[in-house]
Image (tube, rainbow, N blue to C red; front, side):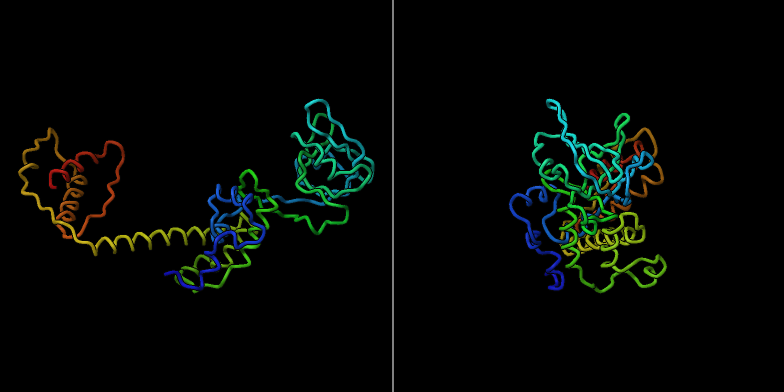
Length: 301
Protein backbone atom coordinates (compact mmCIF):
# COMPACT_ATOMS: atom_id res chain seq x y z
CA UNK A 1 0.00 0.00 0.00
CA UNK A 2 1.09 3.58 -0.64
CA UNK A 3 2.28 5.43 2.48
CA UNK A 4 -0.23 8.04 3.66
CA UNK A 5 2.52 10.63 3.43
CA UNK A 6 2.20 10.48 -0.37
CA UNK A 7 -1.59 10.82 -0.56
CA UNK A 8 -1.55 14.59 -1.31
CA UNK A 9 0.71 13.95 -4.29
CA UNK A 10 -1.36 11.09 -5.69
CA UNK A 11 -4.71 12.83 -5.28
CA UNK A 12 -6.90 13.15 -8.37
CA UNK A 13 -6.10 16.27 -10.39
CA UNK A 14 -9.61 17.57 -9.64
CA UNK A 15 -8.29 18.24 -6.11
CA UNK A 16 -6.65 21.34 -7.61
CA UNK A 17 -8.80 24.48 -7.71
CA UNK A 18 -10.69 25.48 -10.83
CA UNK A 19 -10.69 22.16 -12.71
CA UNK A 20 -14.11 21.48 -14.21
CA UNK A 21 -15.28 19.21 -17.05
CA UNK A 22 -14.01 21.59 -19.76
CA UNK A 23 -10.49 21.88 -18.39
CA UNK A 24 -10.34 18.16 -17.55
CA UNK A 25 -10.38 17.26 -21.27
CA UNK A 26 -7.10 18.94 -22.33
CA UNK A 27 -5.45 17.78 -19.11
CA UNK A 28 -6.50 14.21 -19.88
CA UNK A 29 -5.02 14.51 -23.38
CA UNK A 30 -1.71 15.44 -21.77
CA UNK A 31 -1.92 12.43 -19.43
CA UNK A 32 -2.33 14.61 -16.34
CA UNK A 33 -4.63 12.61 -14.06
CA UNK A 34 -3.06 13.17 -10.62
CA UNK A 35 -1.25 15.96 -8.82
CA UNK A 36 2.06 14.14 -9.20
CA UNK A 37 1.56 14.13 -12.99
CA UNK A 38 1.41 17.93 -12.92
CA UNK A 39 4.58 18.05 -10.83
CA UNK A 40 6.43 15.99 -13.44
CA UNK A 41 4.92 17.97 -16.34
CA UNK A 42 7.98 20.22 -16.53
CA UNK A 43 8.42 23.35 -18.66
CA UNK A 44 10.38 23.01 -21.88
CA UNK A 45 11.55 26.59 -22.09
CA UNK A 46 11.38 30.07 -20.62
CA UNK A 47 10.16 33.45 -21.83
CA UNK A 48 12.43 36.21 -20.51
CA UNK A 49 10.88 39.66 -20.87
CA UNK A 50 12.37 43.10 -20.65
CA UNK A 51 10.40 46.17 -19.57
CA UNK A 52 10.75 49.04 -22.04
CA UNK A 53 9.45 52.61 -22.11
CA UNK A 54 9.37 52.99 -25.89
CA UNK A 55 9.28 51.00 -29.12
CA UNK A 56 12.64 50.43 -30.83
CA UNK A 57 13.66 48.41 -33.88
CA UNK A 58 16.62 47.17 -31.84
CA UNK A 59 14.17 45.23 -29.63
CA UNK A 60 12.76 43.22 -32.54
CA UNK A 61 12.94 39.52 -31.67
CA UNK A 62 12.75 40.17 -27.93
CA UNK A 63 9.82 39.62 -25.57
CA UNK A 64 8.96 43.01 -24.12
CA UNK A 65 6.55 44.54 -21.63
CA UNK A 66 5.35 48.02 -22.54
CA UNK A 67 2.48 50.42 -21.91
CA UNK A 68 0.53 51.13 -25.11
CA UNK A 69 -2.62 53.04 -25.97
CA UNK A 70 -4.92 51.59 -28.68
CA UNK A 71 -5.90 54.29 -31.20
CA UNK A 72 -7.48 52.46 -34.16
CA UNK A 73 -8.92 49.10 -35.27
CA UNK A 74 -8.00 47.88 -38.75
CA UNK A 75 -9.41 44.79 -40.44
CA UNK A 76 -9.88 44.02 -44.12
CA UNK A 77 -12.21 41.24 -45.18
CA UNK A 78 -11.20 37.95 -43.59
CA UNK A 79 -7.77 39.22 -42.65
CA UNK A 80 -6.50 39.56 -39.10
CA UNK A 81 -7.60 42.32 -36.76
CA UNK A 82 -4.82 44.84 -36.27
CA UNK A 83 -5.11 47.15 -33.29
CA UNK A 84 -3.01 50.23 -34.01
CA UNK A 85 -1.42 51.35 -30.72
CA UNK A 86 1.14 53.94 -29.66
CA UNK A 87 3.69 54.21 -26.87
CA UNK A 88 4.21 57.27 -24.65
CA UNK A 89 6.36 58.90 -27.34
CA UNK A 90 3.78 58.37 -30.10
CA UNK A 91 5.63 55.59 -31.89
CA UNK A 92 3.26 52.92 -33.21
CA UNK A 93 2.91 49.15 -33.30
CA UNK A 94 0.20 46.78 -34.58
CA UNK A 95 -1.25 44.30 -32.10
CA UNK A 96 -2.29 41.52 -34.48
CA UNK A 97 -5.00 38.94 -33.84
CA UNK A 98 -5.81 36.05 -36.18
CA UNK A 99 -9.12 34.24 -35.84
CA UNK A 100 -12.83 34.81 -36.18
CA UNK A 101 -13.52 36.62 -32.89
CA UNK A 102 -12.33 40.24 -33.20
CA UNK A 103 -14.81 41.29 -30.53
CA UNK A 104 -12.67 39.74 -27.79
CA UNK A 105 -9.59 41.75 -28.77
CA UNK A 106 -11.59 44.98 -29.02
CA UNK A 107 -13.02 44.38 -25.56
CA UNK A 108 -9.52 43.86 -24.15
CA UNK A 109 -8.14 46.90 -25.98
CA UNK A 110 -10.65 49.77 -25.85
CA UNK A 111 -9.53 52.79 -27.84
CA UNK A 112 -7.86 55.55 -25.88
CA UNK A 113 -7.30 53.48 -22.72
CA UNK A 114 -3.66 52.60 -21.84
CA UNK A 115 -2.89 48.89 -21.52
CA UNK A 116 0.14 46.99 -20.32
CA UNK A 117 1.17 44.65 -23.15
CA UNK A 118 3.60 41.73 -23.00
CA UNK A 119 4.64 39.86 -26.13
CA UNK A 120 7.30 39.29 -28.75
CA UNK A 121 8.11 42.37 -30.80
CA UNK A 122 8.41 41.58 -34.52
CA UNK A 123 8.83 43.50 -37.76
CA UNK A 124 6.21 43.38 -40.51
CA UNK A 125 7.68 45.10 -43.52
CA UNK A 126 8.63 48.54 -42.25
CA UNK A 127 6.25 48.34 -39.31
CA UNK A 128 6.43 46.83 -35.83
CA UNK A 129 3.90 44.28 -34.61
CA UNK A 130 3.10 41.97 -31.69
CA UNK A 131 1.09 38.93 -32.75
CA UNK A 132 -1.35 37.65 -30.13
CA UNK A 133 0.18 39.37 -27.05
CA UNK A 134 0.90 37.05 -24.12
CA UNK A 135 -0.69 39.44 -21.64
CA UNK A 136 -3.06 42.42 -21.86
CA UNK A 137 -3.67 44.19 -18.55
CA UNK A 138 -4.82 47.62 -17.37
CA UNK A 139 -1.92 50.03 -17.04
CA UNK A 140 -0.23 49.79 -13.65
CA UNK A 141 -0.60 46.01 -13.32
CA UNK A 142 3.07 45.23 -13.98
CA UNK A 143 3.45 42.94 -10.91
CA UNK A 144 0.85 40.60 -12.48
CA UNK A 145 3.21 39.82 -15.38
CA UNK A 146 6.15 37.50 -14.77
CA UNK A 147 9.39 38.72 -16.31
CA UNK A 148 10.56 35.10 -16.53
CA UNK A 149 7.67 32.83 -17.48
CA UNK A 150 7.98 29.05 -17.98
CA UNK A 151 6.69 27.48 -21.21
CA UNK A 152 4.73 24.27 -20.63
CA UNK A 153 3.56 21.69 -23.17
CA UNK A 154 -0.12 22.50 -23.76
CA UNK A 155 -3.21 21.03 -25.40
CA UNK A 156 -6.15 22.75 -27.09
CA UNK A 157 -8.31 24.31 -24.40
CA UNK A 158 -5.45 24.76 -21.91
CA UNK A 159 -3.75 28.15 -21.79
CA UNK A 160 -0.23 28.86 -20.61
CA UNK A 161 -1.58 31.04 -17.78
CA UNK A 162 -3.84 28.23 -16.53
CA UNK A 163 -1.05 25.65 -16.69
CA UNK A 164 1.24 27.92 -14.68
CA UNK A 165 -1.49 28.28 -12.04
CA UNK A 166 -2.01 24.50 -11.83
CA UNK A 167 1.74 23.90 -11.57
CA UNK A 168 1.93 26.43 -8.72
CA UNK A 169 -0.94 24.69 -6.90
CA UNK A 170 0.71 21.30 -7.32
CA UNK A 171 3.99 22.64 -5.94
CA UNK A 172 2.18 23.79 -2.81
CA UNK A 173 1.62 20.09 -2.09
CA UNK A 174 5.33 19.25 -2.25
CA UNK A 175 6.52 17.55 0.91
CA UNK A 176 9.88 16.67 2.39
CA UNK A 177 10.52 12.96 1.84
CA UNK A 178 13.22 10.74 3.32
CA UNK A 179 16.23 10.83 0.99
CA UNK A 180 16.66 7.70 -1.16
CA UNK A 181 19.83 8.72 -2.99
CA UNK A 182 23.03 7.60 -1.31
CA UNK A 183 24.51 10.50 0.64
CA UNK A 184 27.97 10.23 -0.97
CA UNK A 185 26.47 10.31 -4.49
CA UNK A 186 24.25 13.25 -3.59
CA UNK A 187 27.23 15.20 -2.28
CA UNK A 188 29.47 14.25 -5.23
CA UNK A 189 26.93 15.37 -7.84
CA UNK A 190 25.76 18.42 -5.89
CA UNK A 191 22.13 17.48 -6.43
CA UNK A 192 19.29 19.16 -4.50
CA UNK A 193 16.69 17.22 -2.53
CA UNK A 194 13.77 15.77 -4.49
CA UNK A 195 11.44 18.55 -3.32
CA UNK A 196 13.89 21.30 -4.25
CA UNK A 197 14.67 19.62 -7.58
CA UNK A 198 11.01 19.61 -8.62
CA UNK A 199 10.55 23.23 -7.53
CA UNK A 200 13.71 24.39 -9.28
CA UNK A 201 12.90 22.52 -12.51
CA UNK A 202 9.57 24.37 -12.72
CA UNK A 203 11.23 27.74 -12.13
CA UNK A 204 14.13 27.25 -14.53
CA UNK A 205 14.10 24.64 -17.35
CA UNK A 206 17.87 25.12 -17.71
CA UNK A 207 18.67 24.10 -14.12
CA UNK A 208 20.93 21.16 -15.00
CA UNK A 209 21.40 19.87 -11.44
CA UNK A 210 17.64 19.74 -10.79
CA UNK A 211 17.00 17.96 -14.09
CA UNK A 212 19.83 15.49 -13.50
CA UNK A 213 18.46 14.66 -10.05
CA UNK A 214 14.98 13.96 -11.41
CA UNK A 215 16.38 11.95 -14.33
CA UNK A 216 18.40 9.82 -11.89
CA UNK A 217 15.27 9.28 -9.78
CA UNK A 218 13.38 8.05 -12.84
CA UNK A 219 16.09 5.57 -13.83
CA UNK A 220 16.47 4.46 -10.21
CA UNK A 221 12.71 3.90 -9.86
CA UNK A 222 12.63 1.90 -13.10
CA UNK A 223 15.45 -0.33 -11.88
CA UNK A 224 13.69 -0.91 -8.56
CA UNK A 225 10.50 -1.81 -10.42
CA UNK A 226 12.41 -4.32 -12.56
CA UNK A 227 13.96 -5.83 -9.43
CA UNK A 228 10.48 -6.26 -7.93
CA UNK A 229 9.27 -7.93 -11.15
CA UNK A 230 12.25 -10.27 -11.12
CA UNK A 231 11.75 -11.07 -7.43
CA UNK A 232 8.09 -11.85 -8.11
CA UNK A 233 9.08 -14.03 -11.04
CA UNK A 234 11.55 -15.98 -8.90
CA UNK A 235 8.78 -16.84 -6.47
CA UNK A 236 6.81 -18.47 -9.25
CA UNK A 237 7.50 -22.08 -10.13
CA UNK A 238 8.10 -23.28 -13.66
CA UNK A 239 9.00 -26.48 -15.47
CA UNK A 240 12.75 -27.10 -15.83
CA UNK A 241 13.66 -27.68 -19.47
CA UNK A 242 16.70 -29.88 -20.02
CA UNK A 243 17.11 -30.99 -23.59
CA UNK A 244 18.82 -34.30 -24.48
CA UNK A 245 20.64 -32.61 -27.41
CA UNK A 246 18.91 -34.88 -29.94
CA UNK A 247 17.38 -31.96 -31.86
CA UNK A 248 20.37 -29.70 -31.42
CA UNK A 249 22.76 -32.37 -32.70
CA UNK A 250 20.51 -32.92 -35.70
CA UNK A 251 20.95 -29.29 -36.68
CA UNK A 252 23.93 -29.15 -39.05
CA UNK A 253 25.15 -25.62 -39.67
CA UNK A 254 27.42 -24.60 -42.56
CA UNK A 255 29.36 -22.33 -40.21
CA UNK A 256 30.75 -22.33 -36.68
CA UNK A 257 29.08 -20.31 -33.93
CA UNK A 258 30.98 -17.32 -32.60
CA UNK A 259 32.22 -17.25 -29.04
CA UNK A 260 29.53 -14.71 -28.03
CA UNK A 261 26.78 -16.83 -29.60
CA UNK A 262 27.97 -20.02 -27.86
CA UNK A 263 28.29 -18.23 -24.51
CA UNK A 264 24.80 -16.77 -24.79
CA UNK A 265 23.29 -20.15 -25.68
CA UNK A 266 24.98 -21.72 -22.63
CA UNK A 267 23.57 -18.98 -20.39
CA UNK A 268 20.05 -19.49 -21.77
CA UNK A 269 20.43 -23.26 -21.41
CA UNK A 270 21.30 -22.75 -17.75
CA UNK A 271 18.27 -20.48 -17.25
CA UNK A 272 15.89 -22.95 -18.89
CA UNK A 273 17.10 -25.75 -16.62
CA UNK A 274 16.02 -23.81 -13.51
CA UNK A 275 12.64 -24.37 -11.77
CA UNK A 276 11.82 -20.64 -12.09
CA UNK A 277 10.70 -18.83 -15.27
CA UNK A 278 13.48 -17.25 -17.33
CA UNK A 279 13.52 -13.46 -17.64
CA UNK A 280 15.99 -12.56 -20.35
CA UNK A 281 16.29 -9.99 -23.12
CA UNK A 282 18.52 -10.87 -26.07
CA UNK A 283 20.09 -7.84 -27.71
CA UNK A 284 22.46 -7.53 -30.63
CA UNK A 285 23.22 -5.64 -33.82
CA UNK A 286 21.79 -6.65 -37.17
CA UNK A 287 23.62 -9.78 -38.32
CA UNK A 288 25.04 -10.59 -34.89
CA UNK A 289 23.26 -13.96 -34.74
CA UNK A 290 20.17 -13.40 -32.59
CA UNK A 291 18.12 -15.75 -34.78
CA UNK A 292 20.50 -18.71 -34.44
CA UNK A 293 20.59 -18.19 -30.66
CA UNK A 294 16.79 -18.15 -30.62
CA UNK A 295 16.67 -21.31 -32.76
CA UNK A 296 19.06 -23.16 -30.43
CA UNK A 297 16.96 -22.06 -27.44
CA UNK A 298 13.85 -23.35 -29.18
CA UNK A 299 15.48 -26.73 -29.76
CA UNK A 300 16.48 -26.95 -26.09
CA UNK A 301 12.84 -26.44 -25.12
